[in-house]
Image (cartoon, rainbow, N blue to C red; front, side, top):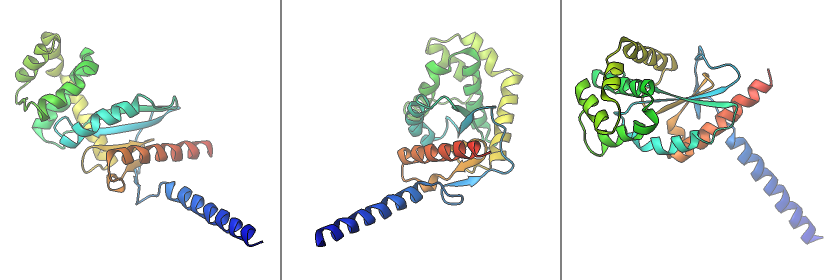
Length: 214
């Protein structure tokens, strides 16, 4: 009888522990995320994750390999988009134009990570558009094509729209992650980048569950 009571007690304690873990895993407003109101526009039928970042941010450089691997394994109902922001800093605005120009010329996959390395490890100074064009050319890309892209009016317009979206999301620093246009992740809720991505997974699950409930 004593053994049976002890077993029931252990089972009950384990049940409470599992229940507590489940509650702790539920993302909470104010602790794990800040509601974005009004919500950002999102693609139909998808839970979109947006990473606000800058090539000039050392934390973004550290985060880039991890979030790239994470994004490559997202389920079909989740999409991923990156938004380079400048915070109205001219030097970062050029870095935003680099991102969009690489995207426009089809060189983003090849040179995206290389830009982070150039800035934060090799200390390459992209102080002028020509300096960027020279660097891109040295990496085997079409310098003329890239030069035309980075200097185009459309790149400047994209930078402005990116900054407007960042303002709408009320981000205060980078990297910042927004989920489903409604949840801005609180970086302080995670002790490292791995935990931040796990928290993002939890918020994605929350968004998915709420969509099912509509």
